[in-house]
Length: 521
Ligand code: KIV
Ligand code: ZN
Image 1: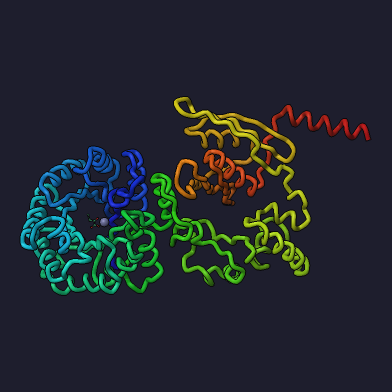
Image 2 (image 1 turned 120 degrees about the vertical axis):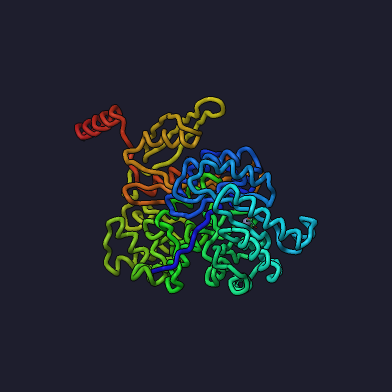
């Protein structure tokens, strides 16, 4: 039986402090519900005294979510604690997270105080919070740079005052894993009554050490981790939930595990990324677009023989359908054959050699090799898809009117046009295009990134679209982001080989033309 590690998610508090990532209350509730499904133990919902919006969000999340503990942040200030308690009044399990700086920087330069005075304020804040709730967490801000002996005195005093959890933040992301691990060990060995509270890690990623430091803390006695989805947070971010959860699942020897339902990790990552407008870097561990994509020939061959040759996590474990075997100039025959088989072609070795030669030539001149390119290579010159789809024309109306789009698409040499409304110009255009295709498709991910900065910037769009269990990625870039978004959608449809939904009049005309042509023969 594993020892339980509590997961304290601070996406909605520390994560939300990122400039430009602020969420409204409705969006915060959506994230909180996702966190509840994921199985986090504590949701830090906000810092109520900081703004009426944060107060309202903590209150709304307290009502909307019932399984996890709902936590509100305060400074070691009575008014902060009063306001937090008020915001938490409807929570089934409420926790106040109060604290103060304990490094010499914070004690002297920020708080203009001294160690004894800080210790007194820490104890008073915990006692005051306990008047409102039974569960009080104390944070020793900048503990990463604090003197261990003084830190131990503070931790001992707040536990004696009744703190149920003590958080040891590496606020500036300064520590190395052995230093942070040793700090937690020092507290475990030198604080009287340490077992009366849970020790928590809270690591920032300024040196890229957040996950390593968190794990070092856990291996030395911490039993709560403070994390965010996708590792978002101030500056270089916080420890990412998905990395800690999967590191412990991969290394079961630790005997410590969380109760997170990892199959929802990818969904949670997409939700937070899209609501917060914060794209996930493609090579991000666990949740990056390339986390399960293989592009070099040697790796592709290895993965196709046995996934575990190059993957330590089964993508399904984190909610990803399958690994991606990307076709690039570095791909080998195994990858090419794999894709051809998916398209229904079984080639003999000599045929494969011939197609592989042509494939390499094409791959040298074209970054993105698509299914229709492969079909062309195997001799099906029109790509097996007479309806090679192309965006011709796009007109959108937006602003104070209902967003409306008119789109013209070519399927081979036949052009169609449709209009639709939506909740924005891209949604309207996508709805118009859906009217013109026969297959049901679903957009799973939609990311817009600017390449540089400024309003004249080029927007790069990545879109992930699924049809009948098959997922493809569409890409486009343009200074007009709406055009780029629609073109990326069309690019994905092209890869899915969708076909045109013919309007009855056109179908009748086509049949008539065929009959006339036959008669003329
Ligand atoms: O990084 C930090 O020290 C914090 C505390 C407020 C918990 O976020
Ligand atoms: Zn923090």
